[in-house]
Image (cartoon, rainbow, N blue to C red; front, side, top):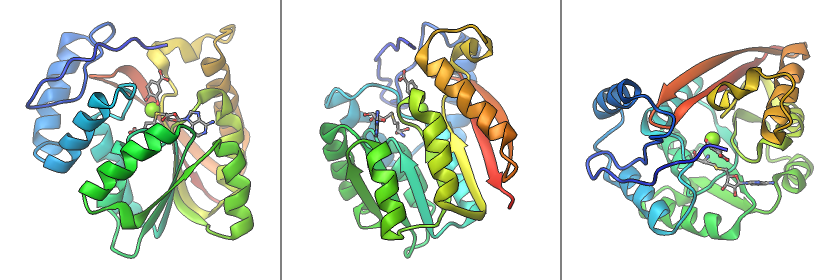
Length: 241
Ligand code: SAH
Ligand code: DHB
Ligand code: MG
């Protein structure tokens, strides 16, 4: 488990993980974050609201949010599926990149998190593009399939890590050829490399990675990230058949 120091810098209000992040990682995140991912009052307001509401400070960083935003601009999805809403910070970054007709379904277990997210999205004028479904993602995924809401063109998996193998399987069921799947937090300060780990997050991530690698319908890789959240990474896959 990453311990995070909940400290707000007014000009760059993402909490910094001082336990893990090296000073130069923070400085570089601050530099590029300032250039590419700053100055948006509604996104900053959402992060602040999340901290004031006492949500865990595990939102994507501003630069990671901008990375998701750029991916969405590249992919031009009509429909996005997010698993793990928290306060809707990543949701907002993705929603901002969608055309007006684009929609996001975001799955969240904790009703308090979902309420905070709805308020943040409403304040940013984005709630009409986002459908937050409260409940265990594993219960809502089959419902999405049954309702025929998909296929989803972009899927961001960022909830409870032990369920990542199942989330990947559902992502495939809800995708089409060309859909992109991104899984957050696949590195966890390097713990993912420990094949003997008993940590359920690491085991879930490793099982997911092995499924991703073996799945003939997917072509995938991993990008390691360092920055204000410490040392982590994204797995990125595209559905090829
Ligand atoms: N994507 C968010 C961060 C998500 S944090 C962002 O970057 O801004 C992970 C979220 O997953 C938390 O809000 C947690 O409540 C939610 N979660 C945990 N277990 C879940 C489950 N079984 N189903 C759905 N959501 C779950
Ligand atoms: C945790 C979860 C996340 O989604 C994240 O980005 C960072 C940390 C956690 O549960 O510790
Ligand atoms: Mg995450």
